[in-house]
Amino acid sequence: MNIQIMPAPQVTPQVTPTATLLRVLGLISAICGLIIVGSYEITLPAANANRRLALERAVFKVMPAAKSIAEYIALPAGGIQPVEGGESPVGAVKFFAAYDADKKLVGVAAEGGAKGYADTVRIMYGYDPDCQCIVGIGVVSMRETPGIGDKIITDKSFLANFTALDVKLNAELAALANDVKAVKHGTKSNPWQIDAIAGATITSRAVGKAINDSAQNLLPKLVPNLDKIRSKS
Amino acid sequence: MSAATANNFEELMQGIWRENPTFVMVLGMCPTLAVTVSAMNALTMGVATALVLIASCGLVSMMRNIIPKEVRIATYIVIIATFVTAVDYAIQAISLALYDALGAFIQLIVVNCIILGRAEAHASKAPPMPAMINAVGMGVGFTIGLLSLGVVREILGAGTLFGVSLFGANFQPWVVMVLPPGGFFVLGSWLLFFAWNERRKQVRGEMQNA
Image: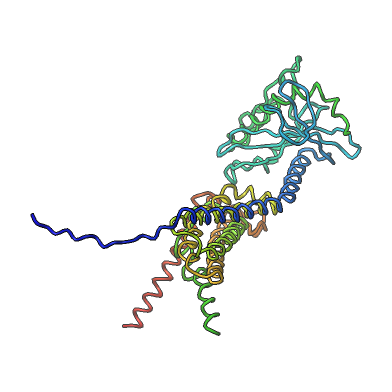
């Protein structure tokens, strides 16, 4: 065999020196970093104001008598304290004390969440310490099917469940006397039951579970300490 | 009209009509199908994408001579991600409701192939001015694409347009239109329309030639 192998034409690839690569990448990263930090600093006040406004609106919706709110946390070991910026301890439950124009406590609002049909249904509920009941709910976020699951915002007979939903604590103040639970449409017989929407049972159950889980956690810590937040300081 | 303005106009119209990213190039289908449940969502998404597109094409074009070929894709992605982050902050500052409605799709603009495609195919070879004009066209074209889905889906699926009720209380919404399948139905109908339009033009051209 006598095959002449032609030498491949010499290609000299243009290689950028490492130093140039580093310099250019460093320059571009610096520019990008400046843009990100700059836009963060510029938009932060407006974004925070938006968040506070959305929160207040959600609380006022479940506590129509409220005029101002204060943020508190209930500590896992019992006891409550106002939120003072920074990180809250692990396992602490956040809630909002709502006050009327005379700075008297009208109720407490807290968030709860449970798995619905599509995603977690997050709700805000208003607790009235005088009747020991839930007096209103609002949806914080959900991705339920439009026209079916999202009836929990609009269905009047469903929302009527939350004019006086019983969440009394048991004698030891350790848990709710009765679990809050959504029952099949038309079978509600006790004040702690939620009459589910026909055709949207899963979403209705999620609302019940969200309230139950959150109230079971929060109320035993909150109720013994209610006197601390009776009036706004 | 001078040659330069004619050229700029060509650059602009390329994205809006002849190479419309949604209906002709069929790029960026993920946000197109996912966020167009209402006209407002579609408009916000379109404008957000357009802003990222214009800003990153501008920067890529300005830097085109110093970006080494070996790392160009990585550099483009860093630049695009920067502007997506900035737009993300801006939307949070403008409206939380919109921000929640669009969810992760704002951040996902980073991987929208229209933007990387434009940076690689056009901005990396053109001076800043034409690159940005081309990006404006593409951005407007994409926004039009999203809006033509969002408007149809909102009217049929909710009976409203930009949140304003159109048909009164007796309208029974065609709910499937705001669910994911509705996105495919409406997109399919639009693509059918554009394909039919294209074919009609071809047939007419053939008949004239004959």
